[in-house]
Amino acid sequence: MAIRCRCALRPATGIPFPAIISRAVALVLASLALCTELRASEIQKGEYLTRAADCIGCHTSNPSRPFAGGYRVPTPFGDVYSTNITPDADTGIGRYSADEFVRAVQKGIRRDGADLYPAMPYDSFAAMSREDVLAIRAYLFAQPPISQPWPRNILPFPFNQRWTVALWKLANLHTGSFTPDRSRTAAWNRGAYLVEVLGHCGACHTPRNATFGMDEDHKLAGGTAGIWHAFNITSDKIAGVGGWSNEELSRFLKTGAVPGKAYAGGPMAETVMNSLQHLSDDDIQAIVAYLRDVPAQPGDEKQPRFSWGNATAVDGNAGTKGITKGSGTATGGDLYQSLCSTCHGENGGGSPDGSYPSLTRNSTPGAATPEDVVMTILEGVKAGDVAGRKSMAAFGGWLDDGQVAALANYVTARFGNPNVSVTAADVRQMRAGSTTGQTIMVLAAQSLVAGAAVLMLGLLLLLARRLRRGMSSARLMFAHRDRR
Image (tube, rainbow, N blue to C red; front, side, top):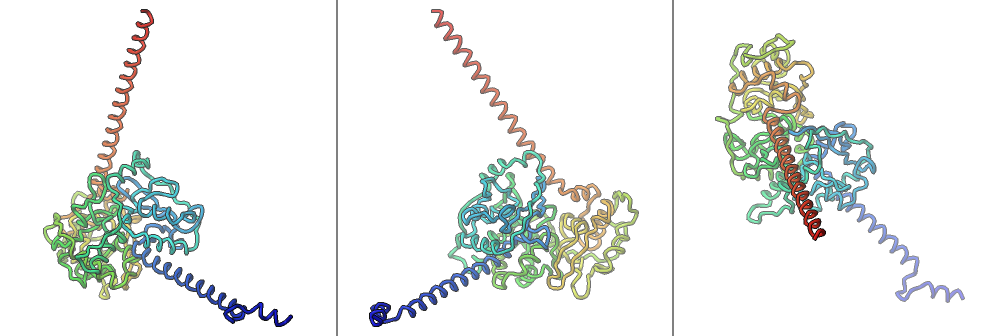
């Protein structure tokens, strides 16, 4: 009986069942380990892609609650607040399936079917590969869920109506995956994908057309990021970055600072801090390779922004003529001496170690428009100590509009483009979140929508009137026939 039992437990191969079970368990464990490794690899890839796309920059309002949303995105039409993209089931993306997440990223459609406002650059992300989108999802779903509803958007009519986004999409959203150019190098194609798709550089650096979409005829010729001016980054030697070396471009992308050329401020400084400094050297060089090949787009500048270096002594009232100082009586020179000279130096040369930038030969005060100088004074600079560069305090709560204008005019007159000036009224408008040009654009859009609504209403009334006449004629005809 014992022999029969042993034979029954031994398969035809002659291998005992315990050995088979052990091998099966080992195979299962190896499969689980492989799945875990693949999952970890996808999450790691997703982390890198999330950095490259700078998702944290717009989806984080409180650094202690990453990806929980609530970040204010100023637009010409009002303020849009970013959504929570943590895996929280109620306020985040925890209920999004893979297909729903891909649809949101590539087509700007929420899980409930509503259109997302294009403050999220899905017009760039539309060409992102599904594989990359899902890797980003894997990384986000690996983060701790945070319950945090986002604030209500502040948009005037008609921009607070989401049906208007559908019209915008018809004109500006082009779907389809990124297609590499086989006549170009692998580095060029990688740079094109990073600039045009994943990094969505055009969202800020490309001007907008009449439908408020990216003007592809003037790609990367300069645009806006809120009030901040995003400079021309085409290969033009005066208006763009054609006068920069490859090493300088790479250094700026990695650190946000190139003495004698530019220092990143505003959204660009935050992009360097949150995103670009984390990219591999190969990817940075790929971006440079692509930017070198972007067709030159000329601007209004007569000389490169970084070429201004007028650090000679000037009257403390330089550029302040016509400025209403409000409660402040100090001149621009006085304000500079008391607030700026300790870090930037008496002659604007910055600190010896480069942690505080020089104001001469600097693209910000050398620009043809004053927005970035004014916004730097109002909001400061978040440099994140990248490459030892220090952040700058915001003075918007300390200075009134006249004082900000006086200081900005002094800085541009002494260290930058002396042809640029700003008034207290301009500062007041920027502080409120718009520029004169943006206000005109919004009013024009509102007038266009109102005119279209009036025309539609008129057509409907005319149609209704004709229908009533037709019905009256029909009743008279039937009445006449009944009499006969």
